[in-house]
Structures are given as C-alpha cells and as structure tokens.
Image (cartoon, rainbow, N blue to C red; front, side, top):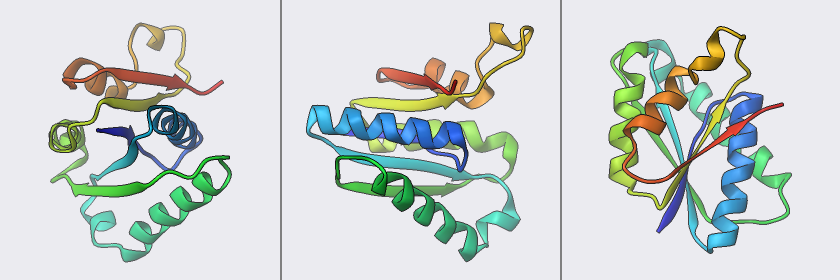
Length: 134
C-alpha cells in the first residue's frame, strides 16, 4: 500500500509532507505526493512543475528517513474543480492513509476546516490524518 499526502507549496504543505514521510516510514510503505493544478496558466508552466519537485526534494532532504516517493500531478479545469479532481486522484492512488494539512483558522472559521482539508476528510474512502501547523 501507499501513504498519500495532499501537497501545497506552503508551511502547512511541508508539515503535512514531513508527517506523511514519518507515516510511510513507520508503515514501511511508499509515499504518493498529490498535487492538483487549478489555474490554466500554472498548468502550462514547466517552471512551476519543477518548483514543486524541488520543494519536495528540499523538504524530504530535511527529514531523517528516505522513502520512495512519486509525484502525482493533475490538472483541474478551474480552481473550483480542484477538490473534485483531488478526490478522484486519491481513489486512483488507493492509499492506506491520506495526510492533509490544515491552516490556522479565525474564531469564526474554526467550525470548518479549509475547503481542501474538509473535502478530503469528507470524501476520501480511506483514513485521513489532518495535520495543523502551529
């Protein structure tokens, strides 16, 4: 099986990636890094795609354990469709666990997770670990 992480280039994304590495190491499984591109301009940008791989490499280099990993990039027709594409990607990868980051929310927003984290928690057919940055 595989541990999957929903990855974004952010502090929360790096924290989720680090936690996913630990889970993959503990379970002796490979890591699937999932990233969905919503903006058509970004989808065509080779520099952006390289920056994702470089960012993942840099984050993984800072961890104590090396695990096998694969980047799964998908395109969404718009930012609105990102969560739907992400859920289909999770089903395709069929992980044992999905790790997703959640950012700090305002007092009013605490009733809800971020839209991506909430979508994964409610829509994934496997266990989900939500990691919150301090």
